[in-house]
Image (cartoon, rainbow, N blue to C red; front, side, top):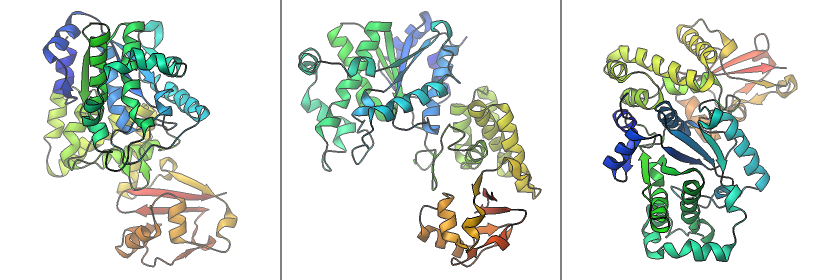
Amino acid sequence: MANIFDVLSERGFVEQATHPEELRELLEKESVSFYIGFDATADSLHLGHFLQVVAMMHMQRAGHRPIALLGGGTTMVGDPSGKTDMRKMLTIEQIGHNAERFKQQLSRFINFDDDKALLVNNADWLLNLNYIDFLREIGRFFSINRMLGAECYKSRLDGGLTFLEFNYMIMQSYDFLELFRRYNCKLQLGGNDQWSNILSGYELIRKVEGESVYALTFKLLTTSEGKKMGKTESGTIWLDGDKTSPYEFYQYIRNIDDRDVEKTLALLTFLPMDEVRRLGALEGSEINKAKEVLAFEVTKLVHGEEEAQKAQEAAKALFSGGANLANIPFTEMNTTDFEEGKDILTLLQELALIPSRAEGRRLIQQGGLTIDEESISDPNLVINLDRFKDNKLLIRKGKKVYHQVRLV
């Protein structure tokens, strides 16, 4: 079996690593416990998280032990990395609920039976720390000057960095130390935007325990234009099928830029790399076949083969004009909502198809909206009951985004 470090490198995961040759040798000779942290800031994981989940799956298949760390404690502070403002403060109850949802989702991808993987919550050790003892034991190892030079803090200094957030790096570093002490965890993985935080944990263990541990970060899931993948006008692409339907999920993946196909196949599927390169090399209209394979494989991993099949069939039916509406996203609305009519811009906002009325007007003026295959040119159009056929209304935004309204 190929060394997992080489596998992750070939598939495009690896961005930075401490002592890569040593780490590669360690992964070759023993089963390594490693961890990835997930702060519980929402009630579902999203597509960006899924890249890290796939990396965990690769590592577990190679015989290493994942530790999925739920951030019940760190979420109460909030990671400033990549943020222009302080994160929204959540209650303990909200964080607990979100952490439980993460636990359910992660269990679909990672095998936690018989200690093959661990699911741990850092609230277990962070919430009961004695502040003075913590400062004396751990805080003395952190240089303020060096912390201020870290990218996660540097970008926030002009706009204002709270003391609350300033503690985040120390808390995440302490997580690595606790996991090393409790479970002999020798490796922390994460997105490349976490490099400063991960590196500080690696250094803390070496200073406090005098032991060798390692840090490795992944490339972020971005488009060829450098934007984070998984964000749309209507919001985040979630792994929860109730927040982003399997059809919407499939369509998002199906519609990625041609230039991103090979990279995304390598990162988000388990197809052999020879097949990834073959599909990525297709040109012209043939690249659409590769996109269909990509969308099906990723949707299958996230939602199961049956839902992936339904999403693919619905997408093909809509594309060919023989629309099977059963499997596309829909919203149920009351008949009374339309008795006096509802203006089209309000309806589009309620369906989360547009972020603002101005965007909706622009969409309609540019000919990007149809209702039941009729092009809409009037942004002041009022939708009433006469518009519905069999209590249904099919809206198409652009060429590929479909949504149905069903009256109840």
